[in-house]
Image 1 (spheres, one colour):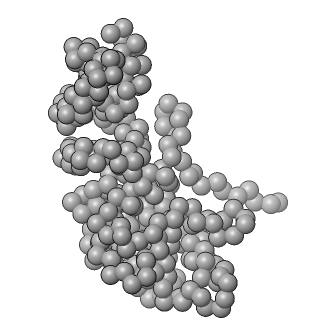
Image 2 (cartoon, one colour):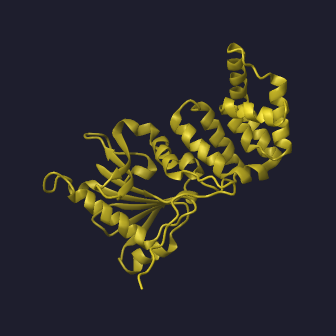
Image 3 (cartoon, one colour):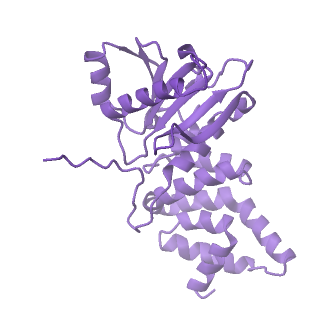
Length: 297
């Protein structure tokens, strides 16, 4: 009897039935993480390995003659860096390791001439929200590798010709990797949430930040509600300037929604524990109008 292949979840389906697109947000998140050294790197999303549906999640190519990468999650980088990302609802398995290891070798071999990409110029990075205990055990006991943990959330796999690292996002340092740490469906630290929103305010016009923040807000909708008034007040405080800017834009365009109506809307959202929608309404004028209509304001 032919065994049915197990389908690993690539997307998380929340209670409202809408699929969350984690991989595009992760691709944007990586570019945020490396924003201090972006001139050294070239990012390619879902790099196709062949004409068949076989693709690397992210390929980061270090530009020729670029200085070494100093970002903590990129210190192992060489010229060609293969990255596998597992969404928060997924896990990093033993088979995932071999799949990515195989993809890396295929990428090295599938070129125009022999040894065009030296094996010494390749690295593998595996990214997961949770610590992959079974995979780590396998790497130690079966592959006879050793695991080094140079800092929070970063694990080097020692013993292969390829530099390999495993990033466990919920163990990363929020100070060093704020956005990658926050790309989760279990955001609960109020101080981290404040820091995230403050950094977002500084970069609110950047599409990369918008893409990541949108998925974080959607994935943590219920947790934001659980925070109730404290979370709501933090959102209002941190988004005040943006709310004011939106109102100014509306006035200039002759479409002002009025300060009192906005205040009433925010109050109602707070009372209904829908604080996550305050942020969305602050950056999305059409959604704001929809909410005003919903509450008859």
